[in-house]
Structures are given as structure tokens and as C-alpha cells.
Figure 1 (cartoon, rainbow, N blue to C red):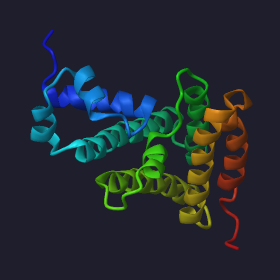
Figure 2: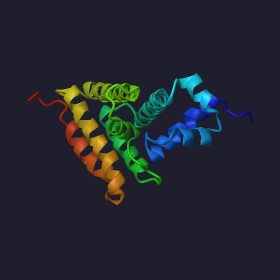
Figure 3: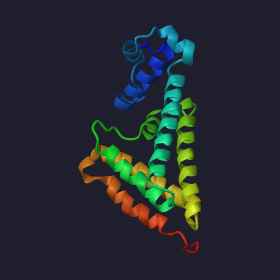
Figure 4: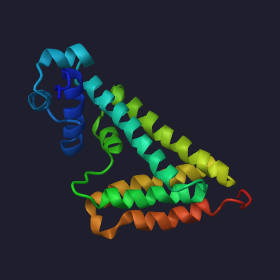
Length: 190
């Protein structure tokens, strides 16, 4: 078995450390755990900011794929597909260690509006919005874009609330609210 190269080790280490310790984890900690020279960081990413942005881009692609897999496993009914996401969130949020949403945490932690991570977070959240809007459109929802916004608010709430009150099982409460959103299908627009 061959050892991954420096770029892959930096990404994997930064993905792990930024989730457990936040995006302000020190470069030295990342370099030490990845067992790479500082030069590799600059050679592959130009610095920590781009490394963090790339972590969010690659993690976002993986997370979106997981959403697709969960929905596909639920079958073809858009209602079941959307609600399956909340069942999966319950499983994720009750597993240890759970540290919440890496994307929201990064967005809130990085005060520089020009940080490249902000674009990665927005692209990830926009992709989820499109995913849910498409399911709600298939369902015949009267306002799929607004319904997708509502679902994302619920998901963000689950991921935040589960950090502070995991025993409350917030995904189950959110699932009941998501049912109200998806059951608006066939209702005339307000």
C-alpha cells in the first residue's frame, strides 16, 4: 500500500482538523499531522486559505453525494426522498464525535469577506438548495424554491441544535416540520 502524496495528506488532515478544531487550526498542526513540509502547502495550495477552501469544496462534493445516495435509497417518491434526509441527519447527529456543520462553522468563523472559503460554502449550500427544489418540483410543490429554503433552514437548525442538545434528537423534530413542507404539494400558492 502506497502512502498518499503530500497534497492528499494535507487535504485529509485539514479536513479532519478543521472539523474537530475549526478553521482557525494552526498551519503547524496541519503540517505536523500530515507529515509534509511547509513548502508543500504553498506549492499545492498557495497557502492555508486556499487549502481550507479546497477542503470545503471536496468535502462538499462528498456530502452532496451522500445526500444523493440517501435519497436514491429511499426510492422514487420525492416525499420519501426528502424525508429520508432527516432520518439520515438523525443518524449522523447522534453519532460521536459530532461537531455540527463544517460549512456553517467555516462561514461564521471567517470574518474576511474575501476569504475563498465563503464561495465554497455558498456553492455547497446552493447545490443543496437545487437538490431540494428539484425534488419539490417533482412533487408538485406550489413554491419549490421557497420550500427548499425552508428545508435548508431546518437542516441548518438540526446541525446546530444537535451540537448543544444531541439527546433532544432535533432531526426527528425537523422531520415532522419537513413533512408539513413537502405535504404542501398540490396546494395552491399563497
